[in-house]
Length: 255
Image 1 (cartoon, one colour):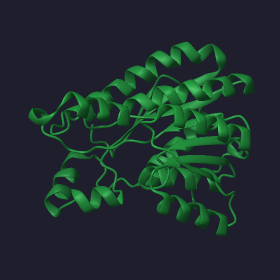
Image 2: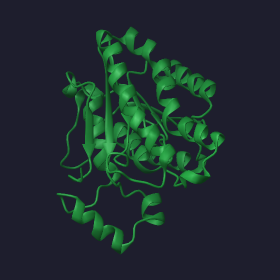
Image 3: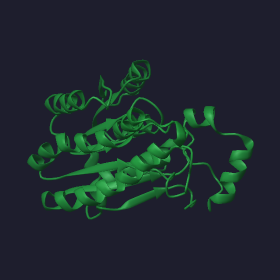
Image 4: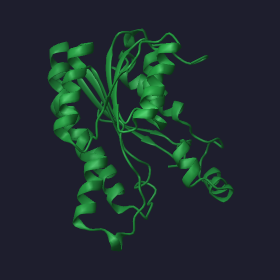
């Protein structure tokens, strides 16, 4: 974090991150731990999760609380959130990070696939929120950060169930910000551009694709997971106390 902000309000704050074992989520878990927060996260990649918790522990940071959980299993997700609250204290920061941008042909989509994609990319965000809000109310407030996507803003094709789910995340944010504002609970959406996670690099980054991306972005540098994590830190900290119901785009000026 050399050269970047430290947020005193995040020390000892209890944070819950979905999809925290790899990519953007792992960067979020790491950045919160480096701020001295108490972090809990879920994922389905046990190997990556164990390695992450060990690395943070060995670096002298608070060891995150990890439990394996498929976010499509709402009962298990809400049980895990309650368990994290019992172990670490009331959760006052929720980062709804988990998602999967699997490509698919619209002509091949079945009802079952459609429902599974919405469960993977949208449904769990609401039910995680539902589970943490009582803790935030009792603590006097909190911050919820939902993850959207640049894809539908940029008219991306080839994944209609994903783009539909991510468009709906913004509606969820707007409505819940209104409902939860009286409880001093802030709800925002972070919209990543094309973020250079290992998955993105392995599957889709080619020299031609990078050239096209740089033409679209105002800033001629690639976006990386820490760029998103630092935005999430600010939204979780008291520094952004009057920011809610907003869309925060981290894309190098592509949109």
